[in-house]
Figure 1 (cartoon, helix red, strand yellow):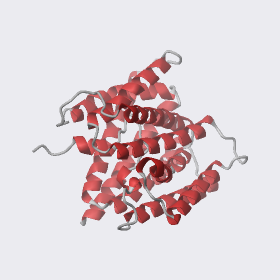
Figure 2: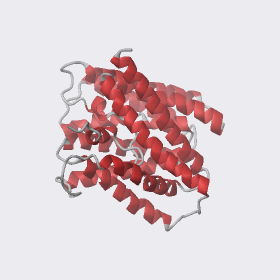
Figure 3: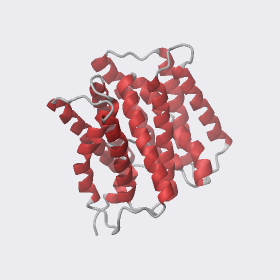
Figure 4: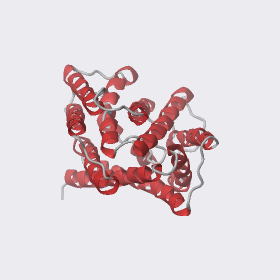
Length: 317
């Protein structure tokens, strides 16, 4: 089996795990507030993440070298997590994924001011076409837009911003700083929300929040293995397989069906994202390759960026 095939299969498995992660969020969201689910899922992710953080070979404290960018990235990660959990709790899975799939398009736009990336007419055309796919999915006037739609869009923007900031920071910050600050910020934000709307959780539901934490970390490590095995231009498009998982899970578990506008809009967005990845893969076409390097997955506190996990989980010498 070639490295690219192995990488693609590992990425497909990772996306299946991430989709299951999101399904558990949606199942709990039928009973409990989304921010309460996020609070306990991130709380139970602390022991798992701590094992990874212990491997950080760089000495130092949690004080960032570039505090402004670290605080901004942490705020984006917290917003992405909160918005994502809320969207999955309130909307059909396929609609949420279709909107979150705009993240590569937004990364392309944000990479211009933040990374100094030069975006040519081909990628600009892909961005415009892809964003038009969002309008097809949302079809303003054709359906009642909900707060969940706004949350999904906010999650995509915040996740794209966090990904680009990581690229800008490079290796100037320790992975522990970049992982712990969003977790601490999340505890402040979601912990405060518990004082406004808290519902006692049954034991099995509390255990399910632990499953969310475990699945998020498992997915991240499979993504690392996928990118180590195959080329980014081959592995990255496999993230769009989540729409297949979402369709199957939504139909089987929640009685959801994918309507034609969602299917068409998602296809437009996915095609645009794949085209951008392909354009970045052309030698000399992009200096930074922000999309293929970002290893995109809508970031949550329970599913941290695999790029950070990889920097921590380096073989010890």
